[in-house]
Image (tube, rainbow, N blue to C red; front, side, top):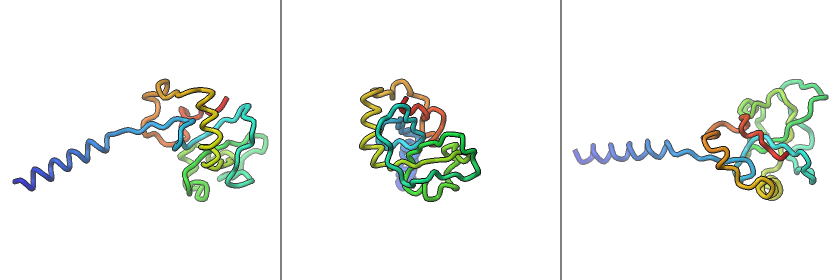
Length: 136
């Protein structure tokens, strides 16, 4: 009976831990998704010098800049749908550049906007519309 109760308590605590949500918004370390450069002065450091596209994309459409986790750029065909970017020409920015240059500047300009976005992004996949705020 003791063993059953211990197993039940462990199962309950594991279920509660799984319900914990983590919210990461643009301008914070660990954010992955679209970046909007607007008037951002320095050019981003890129993983590849040429944009990647899964499907043929018209050249007159501007490219999209993304910060993605390691391995997503390399296997872009597998991950493009998570960012709603399979029909886009995509440049991948280096995460080190994002964390060193982009995120601090974004935070200085916009401050901490987590309160504004509370409830908007709870464990959603990267690249959703709520993450397109970017740098304007």
